[in-house]
Length: 343
Ligand code: NAI
Image 1 (cartoon, rainbow, N blue to C red):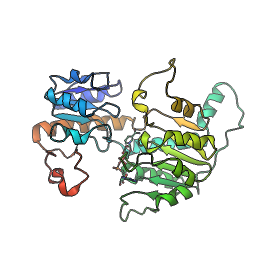
Image 2 (image 1 turned 120 degrees about the vertical axis):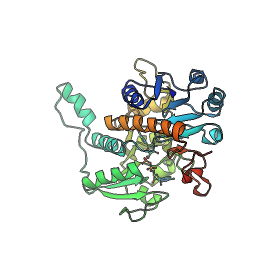
Image 3 (image 1 turned 60 degrees about the horizontal axis):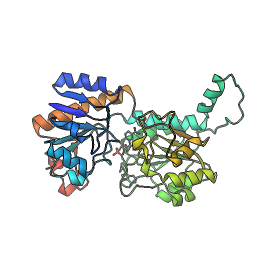
Image 4 (image 1 turned 180 degrees about the horizontal axis):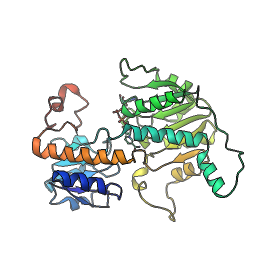
């Protein structure tokens, strides 16, 4: 099995090479992202492996299909960058549903702690032998209320971490978990009561711009917003306005709606064209990391191992537990429930 890996980075390659070699899967690594222009690189391969910012729209799917590609192996959990409806009946899509919920939840808490205790500012000050403390005051997390939106794998680990800090946890989920010991509240109540809000739900039509001007208006003055999920959960312009109005106390962002042309690349020395991002980064109370919440040794190994298993089971066994299609949300009409391929 020969698989073309797009948007391959130095930190991906060793785990994929090792896991592939152990199971007879050969990977060819391309630094470039998958786009309509680069899809031709996939010619002659058995499948493609892509990440969060590769383009897998209708045009790309049609090209891959013409080249005989029948498998797209996502090496991530989210699949909002794939036109699943268009790929249905043509190309199967498999993903890595979980690789380390700890990695992402721990990163969310790292951002929260850094921002609250101004570690990023203190680090730069002491490097310059400036030992003053003014402007570095935070708050105790103990006793504060954190609102968690999305209580799946990552949200629940984040809840456990927050409880360890003695925080009060309230949550909202469209599909609340039964008997999970989680204090679910309506979204409006979560907005009104939370000192910190952390997003752990997927990006769907329902959740796009979940955090908008209206939502921010309902929040406490000084609220912290943490997003390690997907950029488009937040209307970035509305967030900027909320920060300028001193309503939002801090934003901790690992994702950004328009990240796909920027993140994972080095633009130092370039003129930043995205004014919203430039303005956000310029704010003293905004911390941005470039979609790195997943980046731990354990997660990288799990991603490679699961992707190799997905490829093997697809081509060899014909069963694909990790296949996703646009019908998979519809239990009554999902073949995968019967442990078969989706079509
Ligand atoms: P999960 O599928 O285990 O949990 C998602 C939760 O969101 C579920 O409980 C679901 O019921 C809930 N949900 C669905 N629609 C909702 C809505 N409209 N409102 C509120 N809740 C809703 O997913 P997991 O593994 O916890 O991942 C969460 C998200 O984290 C992923 O969708 C992905 O976007 C993001 N992620 C980010 C990474 C990073 O490196 N920054 C890495 C991995 C995931």
